[in-house]
Image (tube, rainbow, N blue to C red):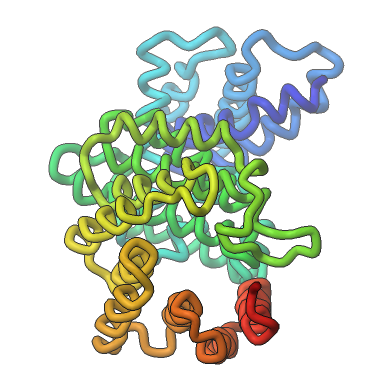
Length: 405
């Protein structure tokens, strides 16, 4: 009972406490330590004293008291102690106090994702400070030693202080300029977790943060677009592998195992985002896949049209490659292969294994099985050992067997 109560309030309370204490004290480490201390005390004291009526308020009070004690011992300026003393106790928050907490959380997200920090540092700092993920877990998920991650986080916090990066949410044109960087961090975080050999917990955190950001910025279409996109992608997480752990392509997945609640949430979120920014367009493409009852019902012409708009709005070689594949399914494999040739002719995707895999897939659909198998093996050879490489080799093996009847 107590463990469930702590788990239910913990993640959300951690972000609120850290964000508020950073605003008041300006000390990131003190804010994190105080929040961790409060979360550690809950499972010790709640079984004895009972779960508080307002668990989040209780945690904030304990963290505030801990921070006050540390600052008092350090003989810091009276202003910080006064502001800490005025933080709401365990009583329910008023509307004004709740609005301030919302602002604090937004400030924290935008500060962690400041473009002055390297992308790796932004991802790590977001995980540590906004999500409360332990440093050791971040290091393991991002494939670096624990000591390296500790130094990276310390350097990021030091840079924020030394460069006097403002702890605020930009507005007007500045918000439009900074928001894509914040969304890019969440997208990278999700991708790290959704990759075949990635850490699944990172994808969960990205979805949680995207929900939080959408809650805090409900009028930003691209925030809604990113959340919808992640929900559609994440809805397939339980169906992406067979019983032996091998990756399954979309057409081979058991769609009954897709998370229908996530798909519904994605559709509702997307419906409230009429503006067609890059994430909204990607979400519309993902929605075509998520709502198709079977592979044959996929609306490939619509997907191709969305990709036509996306590549105009946000040109990149990978998007152009995906557009080529979509046209291959919508208008015939020969059309798709011609577009892939155009992308490869630019040299931008030289040695990119998924470009070769896309060629292999459309070549197989033309009926050139041996050539397609060779291309799949060529793509696999450019990947490190893992689930994705095995999947490509299995596609090659399937093509070199007897032709389907």
